[in-house]
Image 1 (cartoon, one colour):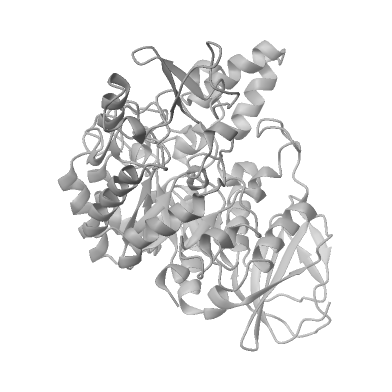
Image 2 (spheres, rainbow, N blue to C red):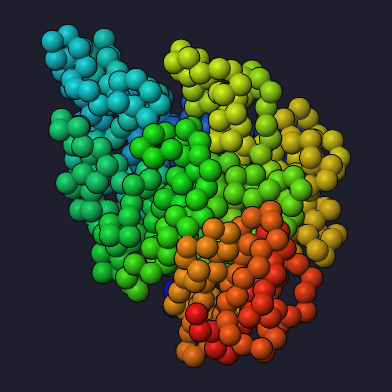
Length: 544
């Protein structure tokens, strides 16, 4: 069993985690100050969102120097200290890496755009105008054409994201070699691996308007592994918004020799109108939701590993999204934790999730920070949406929800900074904060801590099979895990109502391994579940 199958990962968004110098921006020394807290929680890995040099057009996902630290985060010496001090606590640092594109301020692109004969010209994707316009109809993920005209050389360059994020040309062998050498220098520093941003775009064919899963994608990923992380004991996870149980093995099967696992987002698309955007809201349909999880738990080959997550820096807080962040905030946060962490795969916790941090609704658009939300506001106003409709969808799905500063204390700025925070701290830090959580044995924090402990102690969580129960029930999400003759039953009431049901014809009382209500035992034959109640029991038999 490889270590990353048993690990629990904690994602840090550095800008919002802990400020150490009073400038209002989280930094690497601030992370070092909080390592003991993460050790107490029990996580094995920190996934660190980008801390490289960047003009921050896209919050650090526009890298201007892969081998320099952005000054607002600290120095390379700070980074090396973080790697070393985390390792002393049994925690590995996984770096977020963006190799689909760079910043337009990267030295490669600065040389490439100024001189058509530059050795770096072919590191990017350039095309001549067609009838005085862009080469084709490719669109940017951030709206508008994916082509930008560069008058110095009378050509267009490709940018699938911001105009300040020119796409790298993975057809260029020397560019690939430079990327691999950079990756190896990071690996030599002792990092624990890479999270690979938008990895399915590397094989793009711009002329044929193919962006994801292009013809040479897997060739490039196999080469990347051979030249870099195959020689180190590390974990790799790729991001793709379109991967399926059928295509995931192409990336992550043990035989594919590419990555260890993929992030998949299918479960996070179920509260939006079909065939629209994430901004078109709809209520969650629990049977549909269960079927998506069932598919990813049962249809992946045994040789392809899964990832498990509720939220990250790009998605809203899960307790506000699928739970109840008002009346049953603690109960629903614990329910969601139990439900996910008992599944097969490597769990990822996003900073603050473990204390039940919530969305922070804004009242007017000038309170928004994220470029995506600001662009959406203008776009939807032009389409005739009312301001109230736009604010409702931004408050539900906007990325700023995940990026408010970590809530450490009930004090000023939540203990995040002594200065003026770069982003407003959620006022509910007076109730929801790390200090209060650690001092309360019934807090969300201790549910996460216990779930991590259970995963380390019981092979059934890592290795067991998955069987969905009550697949059509509108409120109950229940499933079994089985391993070497042992069966665990996981049950969650996904509603604010009291629900009655039966899960087994047995009179044997079952003592919970973990639960979010204070009960000594559960009668599986006649269950009455309180709002958002969840529990895990070991059962001798379970016939449905």
